[in-house]
Length: 383
Image (cartoon, rainbow, N blue to C red; front, top):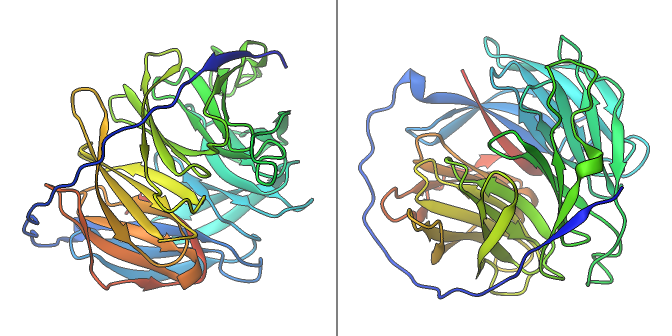
């Protein structure tokens, strides 16, 4: 596959801090309750995906149900209507797969519909296409991504893989491509794939196609790469609500890279440190619903969330705080009302619930953790 390179530079930023007062809580109502899906690591005979009810006014969670039958269902994606769920089976061999499920909001239960092999080991991330007629997985140890067409009922058809070559500066952790995150630009023009192993973002234009047509999802012949700083190890990305900015957490260098997006490509504008201990284990990144603050999780040393304030004019970041968490916070989620941040702490077997101050962005541990085995991925679904 021939791809052009789009070079991206790195820079530094000044770190500052600030404080503020918490906002008063409002009375809770039944409409404040959401379902929360929890993906985890574990064998197929355990409840790898659990369903909870979570009240985003009180910060309290309640177990509803669990699904067995998938080995290591570490990450999920949910359809817009909440009725379909797709999960990876993050195995490191021939049993690596993508899985289609249905979700019944009346009973709060999941049902496994079908599975397809990813043909790439350790699928660690999964995404739905804008038209919701394709599912794509990022296969960490497969050096590839897999594109699965969906039938009219949302079942997975056999997938097509796109492979990558190369290596990065770190001989141990970047000996080959490691695809870690797969996502679509907000304008639905491109499929992007973060490659931790080669310090690149692979960029594929989406074909102009009708939903369910035989036209391939992406135009491989026009693919290109966005080249990042050597040894950075790009992991997860999140776009701003207006689509103007993108924020990427690098696992190895422990930085947040801020980009502008102009409808064609990403242009670097800032790099700021999230991990100050050189732990080389930064993981997830999310924006608050009000767009004022950004959070990035760090593991392996000083586990916790780095907290940043966002300049509303130019999208640049200022680091304002750090919230310690349980061990190995791989994934976290912010409630739609912005009042709570829930952190999946894999190695302390809990989901910690932090209250969020909307004015300052800073967090407070509520002590209302949800005990569950090796949580990895958290997704909300409306009731």
